[in-house]
Length: 164
Image (tube, rainbow, N blue to C red; front, side, top):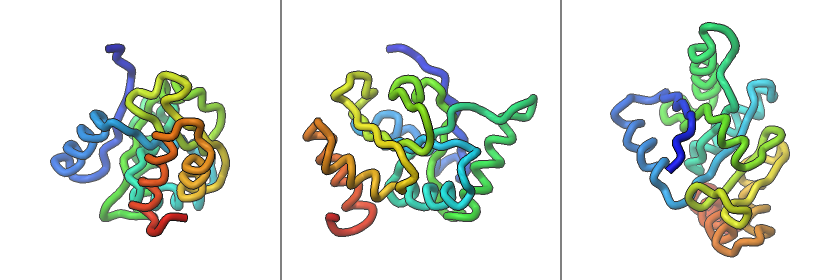
């Protein structure tokens, strides 16, 4: 197994968050939302709110600049989480290799992937400032892979109510 550089920004109580992060790493399916700190704050707050509902992991390419880059990234995520869902924030991660793995070129981008999702049929990618519910609907309706369509539909229904 190839080890990739990843930094998890844990913003909840360590005991409660570590179990869910461990489960997320081992999960059969992954739902990632790739964002940038340059996106409008209102968009990031809505993404964080919907990521919490859908159990998506929010992914940043890298840390803030300078010696305090990690602190700046943590503070950035904490500020978004405070405005959206301070009691139960979504998971955030800094993982540049995921941007490369899924060939993410801009943000926001949404990926539903089976396992590590390294094959072109193992994941679906959607770009655009459309929000998580719309991205899940699009993947559920258009993915070439029937399992990915079913997983996206399941996430949508579990997170946002009745089937679209």
